[in-house]
Image 1: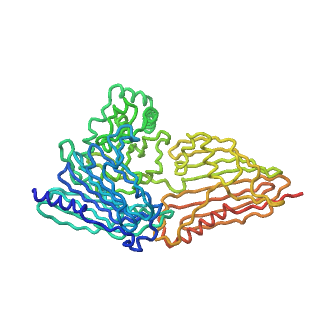
Image 2 (image 1 turned 180 degrees about the vertical axis):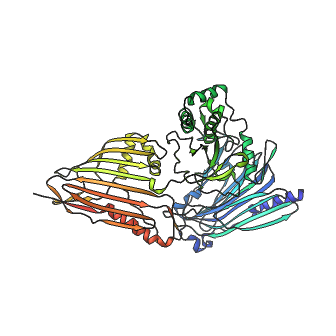
Length: 626
């Protein structure tokens, strides 16, 4: 067995001993195209000693081509009770691959400051000087995992951000033969090899030559990564299985055991709150409102705080909790009155989870699922501003892990139809005889569109004015009054009523005014004609605008834009301008349908966006009369 450990050590340190040539001349031309930075190598070496101990060496060399790639000049890693930094070294090279400066662990900055209320996580970080571009930063460090090893380092191969290409990457894990791992590949196809010698299993994955992606709008999910977890883990002296949802759910339930016990005081409070209410939904809402009113969200990152919630009684006593703690607290109160609920783990980043392979590192948030007789509620417990039962944009339509003991499973949250994500604008503009204008504007945002602007209900008027002035393309407009109201239903809406003025609406040339058709909407950006990837419209919506311009007696309309209707598989634009007496009415609607569309349709998308932009930018020509 000692020889086996020695072999692990040899494969572990091999990464350190091989010198590299980082001359920019050695980068293939194909990897320079659209690149701001080229990952020359990214190597992971994981040495697993047993269920509760592992060492990890990570090495990365990135050639930075310009200032847009300067993110590679920053290094950061975390340490905690279960994770320590054993060694660190870095070298900055010039474009010829010659070393300029070396760095060691003592050069790193260290901080225990955290945004979390309670945390045992600390940070090592450093920003390297560039010495001009191009340059290469090579970083190598070793970390030790101990006591609670629920996952091994994630093999990050490629990210969604544009401008990064990869020359080569590898992941090697050495572990005792009696141990097994679970791997979950996301968006990648890796060369995989397996070998074994003297009681040590060695698995290796490699990938070469990934070109940079040119950043564009409506990009599909392009993240490439491999998650690596043990099939068993050790916690508090117990061996826990991770090979099935049954095992996983049973283990999580053991972490929750006894934490939902309520004191007599809290039991009495719960029954007092729902006394006289017969409808279960109303009971849930009453307890939800009590929780959001009396408890605040804080992040807890102590011990296994990423998995185990605070006890319900601790949340009640301290009046705070993280996403798990608050959700678990509400679930414990519901249990007291006989309403079933489940803690749910979900990701705000990964929309889809693998139903067959278990991984603790693919989720980053927790909510509560409540089963009623004729309805399932998915409750976000961390934001008191969100309406009861509303599923916000960060999780709507996402897969989630429903924790239910042996019945733990993956479920998918509902997705609101595109048609209910509405942004409606109604504007009345009154122009006087000198060209001055008064505006009465009414903006209503519903469901998904509500979620983007709900902060308008809580910020002050100065910030609201700043927001509006960025949205409205009228140079001399002055915001005089703003009133905001919210209708907090399961499909909520927010309404903003605005009064404004401008000393002139449009541009004047002689006796004529050139008035914009719709300066209340932002322009659409066109897609790259040479894009290589399909067009992924993750979020669909409807915009409806009605703008009325009331003219004085001495001004009349000379030219009105023509009616315009265009329809595509992915959307529709409608624009019409009508004159009735001294009132011009502009009606415009835009529909954008969610879905994945072929890259071959990029010209049609650009035609669609140009049509919308031209409809917004079109001019009404007004003329002064004697």
